[in-house]
Length: 412
Image (cartoon, rainbow, N blue to C red; front, top):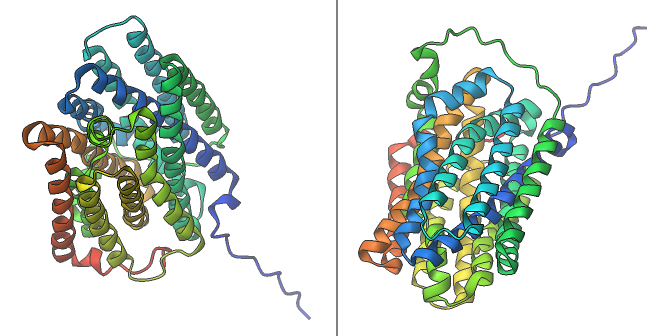
């Protein structure tokens, strides 16, 4: 009789079964929590100094421009060097810039350009951080657990966007020092956790340092219809529908809820998104993934319109929560499809392109909102943007049939 080898259990589909991902996830929660505290403090400070919605738009623009200017280098760095060390260095840079923001405020400067310079430096750090962060996830879990990892990775951001703005509003209400000092301490802790992630084996990169190697991410994106459709959908949908930049104006001038109310408003999208992320982690999308994604984008646009028209705080907060829930569905599908469709050898560069598009949709979207509000008014800027997002969802569903017909998210 021949001995039968014991059956090898299949890899767990639960991302938290893998300790490196757990350390990474904690780092992501802490890092984003610190960013949210800084964001609330800076947003309130800038609008309090200027009372100009365009100034809030510039806050987003100066953080986006470095990602755009450095896109050909950030992805290459993420593919050639340790992604965990890149993340640690960038988190350290964010802590230093946060200290500078406090110093600028503490010395009593009455002009905003030093704040913009510090935010631009943070933008440089985020430009290198984003591709490394996104590209590291598939190195920490097997393909069977990637969709679960994406769901929990997104939930880490949502947890921080729920608690961070509320904490930022409370801390800033106590003092600017309390807000900025807390953020710095959190950044330091986040850096420690990412360094606990073991060194990951890397594929040898045989490409020479040439234009072809540097631009490989762009070439891959523009030749893969699923990746191109997913990335560009996020760009135009959030570019038009983003309303976060105008929340300080809504909190002060329309809803009259103060810094505490601003914190609740900033947290509301995260509440909705976290609820959906938890549901997706337990019961992932098994089929019709592309249709779910387009439905999420359309829902994001519709709830943006409701938020823009509301003059009642609780209705605004509910609309924001539903906005976050809709966006989470889109993010979950889109990010999983991009990671599954991208080889590890170019994943850093592809994610650099993706982060530029994400940055354009968020930070540049904030600039778009600020400019629109300055020209046509705060409420019309938000409402027209939400309508534009719904239109984009319909057009992309027609123009990218491969994306619309995407079915499974488990790599099979």
